[in-house]
Image 1 (cartoon, one colour):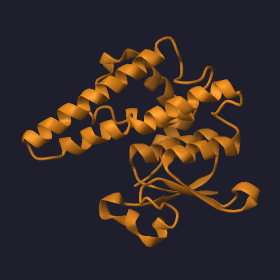
Image 2 (cartoon, helix red, strand yellow):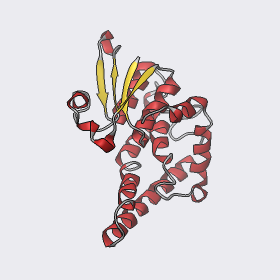
Image 3 (cartoon, helix red, strand yellow):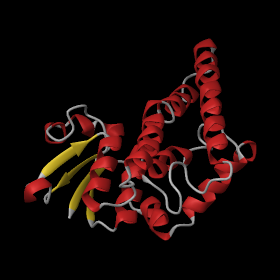
Image 4 (cartoon, helix red, strand yellow):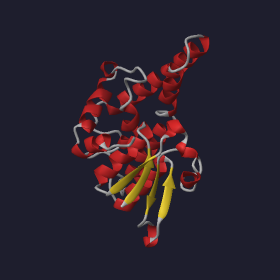
Length: 209
């Protein structure tokens, strides 16, 4: 059974969804980031950057335990472990890697900044931060919407990939970063399609806090 150290955040949800979709048994260990539990020495031992999520797989490579931190690295590890949601064909894998890195580099950090500045006191700093990062968030949604036109999934055909799980974690918070799917119909259709998957739904229902 995989130990999942996490909290109820977009990055945490990426992994609970992936574990459910891959049919891997797991146990949740909550890390309350609001109370600073991510800085506990025990968590630092498996996540040197003091960020959730992190996993410990007692049956890692060679049958030996392994810990993995960073949500993108965890998704790649789990896909390689199970042989699922990451194509075997080298050319097809490139697209999954591209969109996974797109999420990690932009479609996460940018809406995350929107969340941060919306919580700040009214004033010029808040207005500047929200304006700057919301504009970039909308641009990224536009990129995703164009990609999904005429496609079921972001990087693959027939079934989703770990890139879909990664992106879905942040699209789940679209209302919080003030994005309306009516402006991005292809994203909205993809989101509904993903959320209709029973395993994905279980990943969002799992108690992470």
